[in-house]
Amino acid sequence: MWYDSQSFSRLIAACVAHDQDHGRDRMVREFVAEFRGFARSDIQKRLLDDVGVARMSLRDFFADPKRVAKLLTHMQSITKPVAAKDLGLLARDHFITRFEEAGVNPETFQYRRALCDVDGVPYAIEAAFGYCPDNATHRQIVGVNWSPSLISPFRDLGPYDSLDALLAEQRAGRDDEPIVFALHLASPHIAYTDKAKSALVLPEEVVGALAEAVGSVTKTWARVRKAEERDAAALDRRLERLVRSRKVTIKDVAFEIMEQAYNKASNNGELSVTATQIMYAARNEIQERTGKQLDRQYFNQTVLPAFLSENEELTADWDIAYDDRGHFAEPHTGHMIGLGTLSVRDYLGEVHDFKMQEAGFASARIVTRGPHGGFGALLYIEKEGFLPLFEQVQLAARFDIGIMSNKGMSVTASRQLADAICAAHKIPLLVLHDFDKAGFSILGTFKHRVSRRYTFENKIKVIDLGLRLGDIRGLQSENVFDKGNEATRAANLRENGATEKEIKFLLHRRVELNAMTSRQLVAFVERKLKEHGIDKVVPKSAELADAYRLFARGREAEQIISRELKKLNGGSEVKVPRDLPVKVCAYLKKHPTMR
Image (tube, rainbow, N blue to C red; front, top):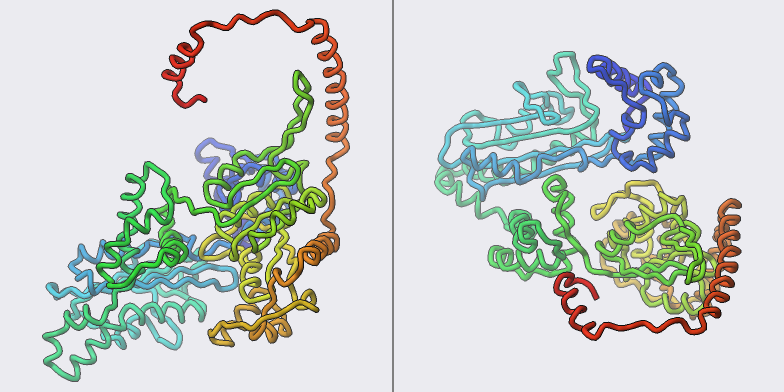
């Protein structure tokens, strides 16, 4: 949240004034629920209980400035930073549709977005360009926060002077050029040089990103125009040169036809689909138009997630299921699910506090799904093959931990599970990984909270169990065959938490968890769990007392039932209908889903 106390107070004052004008008196809970990340009732309850305003009206709450400041501080500690992509982009499809309506040749259309964050404030920049071969009209449209500007507010861009100067340098500024150019800036915190809002004040980083976006969409046009200035005959080949110079990529075509492919695979959104089904629906056209073979993993793991990220409004209701690439197992219950989109969604819908079932003809028992009374930590391991070993030594049951395993990088489903479970039940996520670049990247996906594939809704406690440099003594290492740029690899390792000594080692060598024997691995994990205070879950005194009473009554009930059954001495004869199979078949016709 980018509010300070003053702006937050002004917002509340405006809400109170609006309520008074319309005869309302909303509660603080209603006000909080309107903020991103506070839609869930459990989060609202925890926040309002902490501040002590659970049943207070917003008007009464506003009377105490200290209380207002306290609420803001608590909200900022809970909520996640808003990413620039979440501001609400106009998106490529919107621009190309409007540009075609204006007479732009679609093959000359160029679009670029730039997202940046400056001191916690997100900025989203979108630039688009197109050539109109049959129209002599020059059109330039600029806007800020979804409002078009009559006069360009981009008149002070520091070293670039102004937007007009940038466009002139790219040969796109003259009124007689038959082109359409659009630029849109979105940000929650916009500053102007005067009250008339005639010129923006932008941070250096934003100005740089804006200039790069403008240069990117006009680059081909500038090259063609400069060639025409050198050779007048080149003017006759303008459209040909603009179209020819634009390479069509797999991503370009996929983005263009993705909605069509999803609708085809999902029967126009009626049915759930897998990512691979969408790939098959799009594959023929992509390969025909690009002349390239479409790789399933590239489409499923890169192209489709990028499209979903850039078109959130369009794809909000798309029901896409990714295949299981790992498993999650609860201790004690024996319950296991695959780490796929649908499996995790179903599991989270079943999670509940433990329930006590009184004894009847069956013994008394406690039913649980999820952490409450069952486990106090969630362990993520980047290997699928260790679950049988951990089950054999009863690691999960002895330490009361849930265990997730994946084949390498965590899938979206595992992050979603950790996000929901660890936050709601205030338990830590433990990460066990190889000592290599990929291992640190896995750790980074949980710690950084924001990535292209998944953005965490909650702050969770992440504990790195290793492997780290201090853990690999005596273990077999192997060469690293990554041929990427060393500086880039080092920067990635540093970003994901590796020390300088670790980076120096990891640029050339790596160590896998598999380098340990089974006994070594179990001893290593047990030691790490103890170091971080992971131990048995002991319920609250009142819950223990209720459980004690439950089983005491259960023993009494079993004794009573046993005595009464003995009195029946075998019971009376039960008469079975002769036409029972016929009755069953008739029932199944009315209820075809029954067993």
